[in-house]
Image (cartoon, rainbow, N blue to C red; front, side, top):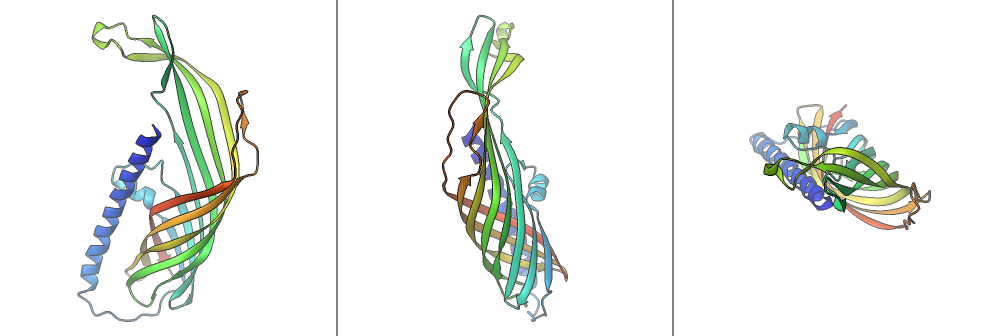
Length: 253
């Protein structure tokens, strides 16, 4: 189930990437027909991560996407200060499970559901020629935040279909029992280099598409607790995360 979820998220990300690249290419063709002139860049920019909105327009799911806000302050014509907050809350639900017990009239499945939430604050710097209407952009951010992950095991009992034409299909769930539940809260710290491209849209709007390989150190601040007697452990360690595509639409003033 996790593999299917990851493949779906990757498909959504690739679709978003193609959408952005197409849009930037069309804008570039338009800009190239004009005489490039240097302009005094705006001092401030307030942005919103629009990945979920674009995914909805393309008919994709948004459960694996993050949300965020950004504020940027121009320090020099080629450098801006970055402040950002990101958050995400998603749950992977096992609809099928693994057969656990079987009888003449019912079958019990063992379901494993996973959930993950995080809230992170980011501080850093980005570089580009902000006197140009479009240019490449790169930067570096420091990450600090709080993560929460949980896992629950459930037993789902379903009666068998009585129709000869649907032999082997189990339906009509008659019970769903929580067998165990485990939760871990962790503090994370890390760094994230940023690479991408930005385009000014009209006078006050700016669209940026970036990728960001992130290295974070995660350490639990509370022991994993469980509603079952099963032992649970979670160790500190480094985590590599690839933020394959971030779309941010900003208002400059």
